[in-house]
Structures are given as structure tokens and as C-alpha cells.
Picture 1: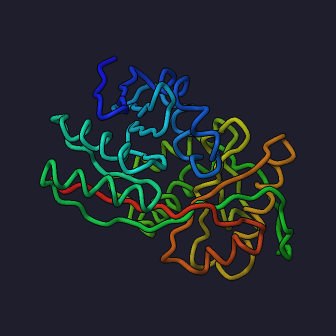
Picture 2: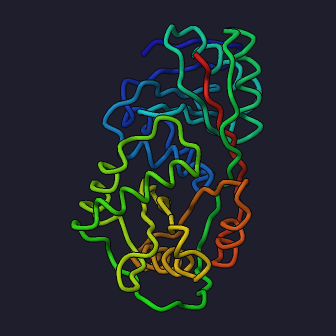
Amino acid sequence: MPSRQMANLVVRRHPDAQAFLSRAQGFLAEREAENVLMLGVASSATSAEHALTVDRDGVCVMAALQSGSNLILSRGQPAAIEALAEQLSADTSLLPGVIGPARTTASFLDTWHARTGHETRFQMHSRVHELTEVIPPRRPTGLFRPAARSEVEPLAQWADALNIELRSEDPPSAEQSVRRRIALGRMYVWDNGGPVSMAACDGPTPRGIRINFVYTPPEHRARGYASACVADLSQLLLDEGREFCALFTDLANPVSNRLYARLGYRPICDFDEYIFVP
């Protein structure tokens, strides 16, 4: 595929996510929990708008992937970040946004602004956490179980509410997202006379998996349902052979960050997300 050289760096474009993984997976796996989002997206993507690696002397030193959403960046050294940003800024299509380790994202945007003049809007400051052993919480009334097909509609309404809380830009259809996760056996609820909290898992990586879609409606909060649901899902995934679970938190929500810390989740890396303004 076409590439761009900068000093001893080469930016390579790959035709699809699988070709990208064959080049980048070893590099990304060195910080697997930090790169859980990119690895997970690449493992399930059927196509990719952008799938790039930056090589130095034939070795991958940075990666970037866009598949249906914002461009995901890995950690990278300044020269690699600049080379990647220059390559992408030469593309005529405007990226919807970018997310990655905070320092990497800031450096990427410096070059992007200098080359394109395009404005950006800050979206979210988040943190990826890793768990290898669950600290069991106090269990509330109810039980943990897989979500049922008959529950797509109410859980999709919760997913819409979650996207609003997360300030998500142009999220995919909540109904389709919930229906897909239930069909794959990746959506779970805490049931106390009916669902009162939900959590899902997505994007398996070589050793781990990412937990997402964690939501409890306001009328059911502060009763321990979310803690119990996430704890049981995390334990289930570990029991199935995953070495770790990872999840992202919004740093503007201190309640959820404390909740996950009590369950055994430990911070790995801070991420920043920006939206590109047309």
C-alpha cells in the first residue's frame, strides 16, 4: 500500500483491519489494556476508513485506526505522531474526530491544526482501567443474568440515555447495538423484579476484553445494582479465561470512578477525545 517516509519513519496504509492487525498487533499487545479499544475494534471490524501504522527500521512504533467512528490513536513518539498527522492531513476527507492517550492526542492535533487549519471541539477526558481480580461488593437484592431478546426496547432506551450522559456525537442506533449484543450473548442485567441495571462486553483482545454499556436508570441508583452487575460480569469473563477486563470511565463522573476502583479496576492511561468541526 502507499506509504509516506519521514526521516527513517514510514507511514503505511493497510487495506483493511485484518491486514492492519497483522502488522500492528505485536506492538499494540505490549500495552494491551491501554490499547484495548483499538485492538477490540480491529478484531471485529469488517472495513476501515483508515488503518495505518508507522514503522521505524521495519518495526511498528505507532498505529491508528478508524472504523465507523473517530480515529483511534496508539501511544507514539513525537516524530511518529507528526508523520502520521501529516499523512492524514493530506487526505481530502475530514476525520469526524480523534481519541487516544492524552499526550499523543495533543501532539497529533498540534500538527493537524498547523497543516489543515481545521477547528476541533473537546469532547471527553476519559481513563482506561484494568482489572485482573474482582473485589466482591456488597450484594443487593436481585440476581445477575443475561439480557433477554424481549428486553431490547427498554434496554435501548437506557442506551439512548447513556449516550446523552456521555455526550456522544452521532452514536450508532441504540436498538441495533443492544439487539446485536443480546444476540452475541454479550449483554447482561441485574434483575430485581425486572432489569434495574445493565452492562455489556465488547471487543475481545488476545488476553482481555472491554466492558461497556454500563447504565442504571436514575430511579434505581445508589442501591449497589451497577456494582454487582459489573462485578459479576467481570468475574464471568475472568472465569471464561480472560486474563483481564478493561473499561473506560468519564473523568467528569467521580461516582463511577470510585465505583470501579472499589471493584478492583486500576487506572492505566488517560485518553482525550476531540471532535473535528466541519
